[in-house]
Length: 179
Ligand code: IMP
Ligand code: MG
Image 1: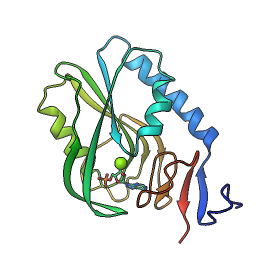
Image 2 (image 1 turned 180 degrees about the horizontal axis):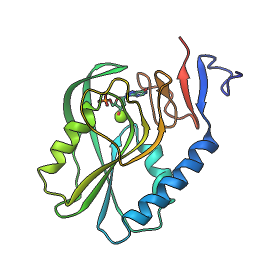
Image 3 (image 1 turned 90 degrees about the horizontal axis):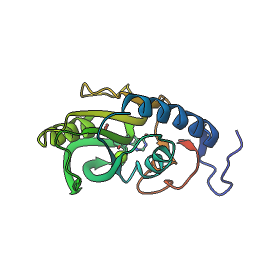
């Protein structure tokens, strides 16, 4: 397949910009219907979720507070170690509110399992997950996303916020890195 980025022949398109846009509209409709009467807090996980979050919130038909958390997980660039530290914590009060975590991708589930436990200490009314991509093959923790954009079974993905060693986040579509 021809690459969209002539200077980056290693990128093979997996999910197009228009497919992402369509799917986000569908997710936003469901979320708007499900959370219409609640105090919704959308919590984006930095850095990966920044583009997904920005596009999703603009399709919502309901009020929502927006905040971000940033986590560091030590491991190599393609596998999460499970040793997680917070480098920027949530700032909005979430006690009694409905929290929807906005994540770019769930792989082993370690990051999100750790985050859910961290948030539960603040006694939110509910905590659910909305992930752009759900990769289930390497799951280590029993977490499941209430909202999922796409299933990821095509190796390591980059673009639309997703990175490999800090690169490729800016691409409009989602790509796999050719070996
Ligand atoms: P987990 O803790 O294994 O579920 O890893 C989740 C985090 O690892 C995500 O938030 C991403 O930052 C990163 N990650 C896992 N798989 C990929 C991928 O295919 N592309 C880019 N980042 C990934
Ligand atoms: Mg991430």
